[in-house]
Length: 102
Image (cartoon, rainbow, N blue to C red):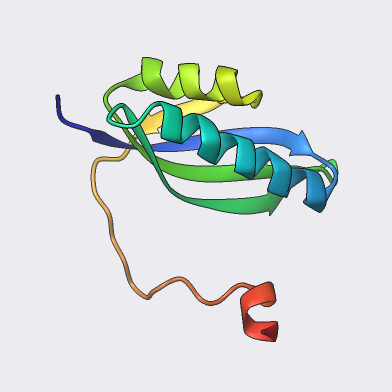
């Protein structure tokens, strides 16, 4: 079974950057349990209009149901799930502030 690339919007995940790291750790653990069905590629942590933190995540998955199961098991939302039809890369992602400081 092949994997499709998806963009997932998770709104208002947390208000605490340290909690976001814990959410990421749990997401990774659940992903390991679901090997072959889902694969986390990258996430961008974004500031929501209300000041909380959300994410825009890129995953590979066998289907949208695998993404919903992963989100449920990891205890996080999957507010929007969209198949990625194409990738246009103009430049590599810049280093994050924490990477640049090291």
